[in-house]
Image (spheres, rainbow, N blue to C red):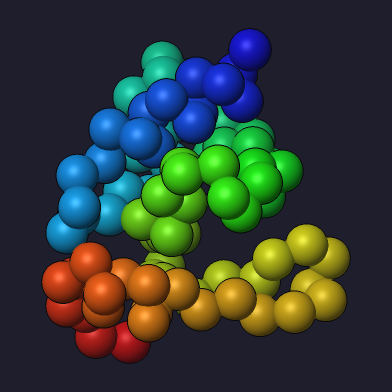
Length: 87
């Protein structure tokens, strides 16, 4: 059920805004569960309509996905949502 709650919370992030994994966990009354929020978003299917690119880590935009197999940078997706940021 927690994964579904994460997906619903992420759907509430307005276009042009971002949230951290920790903020989503706190919003769901589960502080300290930011890793589980990340797992839920990683398990999400790309074509689900959930704006996973609006969730970032507390240190910045870029982060590793999976077991460090590849590096995902949502910068282009965020720029398309009119979000400005500096790395």
